[in-house]
Image (cartoon, rainbow, N blue to C red; front, side, top):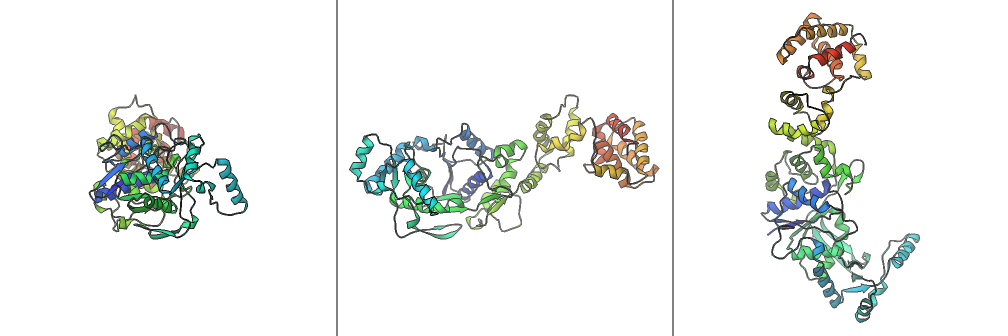
Length: 479
């Protein structure tokens, strides 16, 4: 049975790249009717952030990436949080020590830094030659019992090659003489990422390891551990890099790519999932919008690309706009109203007015919080025109007549509704012998401060008669 895992570290904000890894692992498993598990890799306590673990659970739930095994869904006695599995890692380190494939290292940071600086001065790649490698096991144990600080390192081969086949990047070979003896157990007793990762993947029966291609260079370390522990190697699926236009690769602590920040701005989980599915995957057809069920059905490892892909916020906004426009009206109102209430005082507004305002922008919003930006014209006291708008108002001598006639018509309107507003606009056009553009554009500019926007009659209706008259009075004769 196909079994994949998502194994994040609770060390920062989850970003688009993290979710892409989780999604692809989930789709690989579910496409084959397999299982998807969650494992928390929290062995680097110096970087663990308070609340980060809970955010992982919440986000997987938000994006409906339900795991079959993991924290709170333990199978038997299996723990899925690495800090609770320390005895397991220690026992496997001891097995390697007994086999002579690992050793105790007593070198301190000063020794390591000295060699590192020397290599830098000589402009050579740093490859640590550990003098502890030749210390006998009994002598090493005595030093450990004496309380000397130590790490446990794996003995890496000095000759030959290590090869494997990646399901995306194909056959890859590494020269073993480029490898230094890797640390398995750190001086604080915690395992390194590589060591714990390999042990857990084997004990949890992971068949496909899915991760970013930045880990390709570390593959010899993983593979030699599998071999030393007599573990079967799983399949490896390395995903192409996700880059941003301005900042290179995504960063775990970069707020622009933070999933919680995107959700707070009003990006829908369905839109985010749909967009990131295309970050390194191509369905080989023209379909752009997928439900999670459709992604499970269509997803195929052979369709994962090697080329780096670009995280483009504008493209995500395009997807999100589609999903917002597809919402039913009531769901849309419930979704956008909090963003409006967070910015503006709506106490003097009726429910009908609020709903009509929100619906005016339903097919034009790129994200939920944008409603507060585009609706600003309905709440501000004064209108300030930019140079382009002012030049337009001065571009034709008929414009003052249009505005004057429109003001008169508005003042004489005793039943404020959409139909009457539309009839007023038509009468102004007829009375001034103007074109539709020369009628609508000056009115739009003066009452909204913009030379673009939604349907003018609906905007006028929502602005209200008195607000429009006030704005006309402030502008007529000024341009």
